[in-house]
Amino acid sequence: MDGWLQAQTQILGARKHSSKSRRNQYTDSVVLTAIKLFHTAIWAFLAGCILALPIAGFMHRFDWAVILTAIILLECGTLALNRGLCPLTGLAARFTDDRADSFDIYLPNWLARHNKAIFGMLARSLLSTNRSCCGIG
Image (spheres, rainbow, N blue to C red):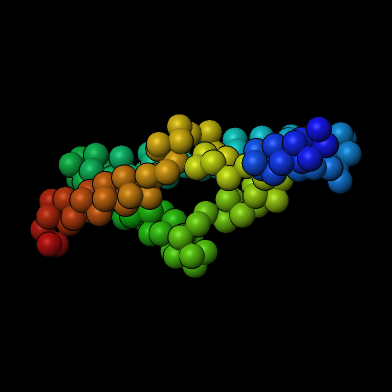
């Protein structure tokens, strides 16, 4: 029976013996929850910036469009410097063995998986739309 249990543990990816105490596991869970909440709040803010960009352009609030563009480009730079990953992903990974697409953020798995592609295309199209509205492009 011991060999069967060991095989099942390896198949399921569970740890055979946890070196962490219950207190450390609880602390890790609390810290991970805080990181996920913070990450989700930042994601919502950045998604809002991308969605607000064409509104600023259509309202001829180019001062806001420049600020929103700078925020979006800062996020792109942060991702580029971190090899395409959010720095909070690496931080969250320290507190869990879970590696699902949404282990570090409160988003549905499909959105977490395709987040950069969806919002990257949206940001590019909106930036080009604002450029044409401003007579730049």
